[in-house]
Image 1 (cartoon, one colour):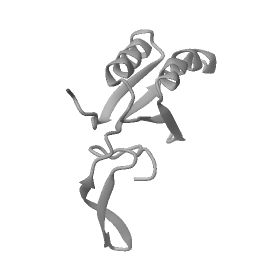
Image 2 (tube, helix red, strand yellow):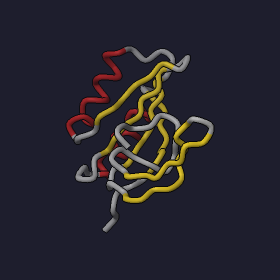
Image 3 (cartoon, helix red, strand yellow):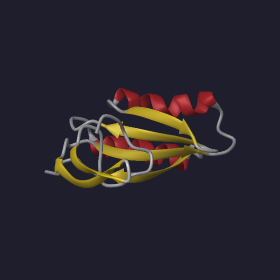
Image 4 (tube, rainbow, N blue to C red):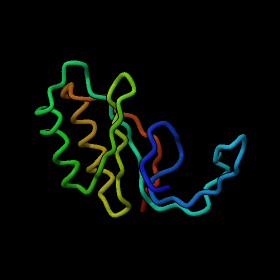
Length: 115
């Protein structure tokens, strides 16, 4: 995978997957190799101003996270959490943004190793 997917579950950035061409479209078959990345999705609350989002996003960025965003009638952020990021810290920061009314989030794929 060369990006963080918006709507798929169970795969993350840099996972190696097998696809099959069906009706002219590449269709996911299975994951070959996991990258160790995790993926979360964020949807901002309706009245969230950009400065508030930035204030709560910055600690996630400092933790190594990146996002891609898309407008689907609502703005959706697909958040890549690299394998070397502290997943407990990242999750706590996501919860903090939700608790403060900045966004709602969900886990799309947990790929981190737990020791």
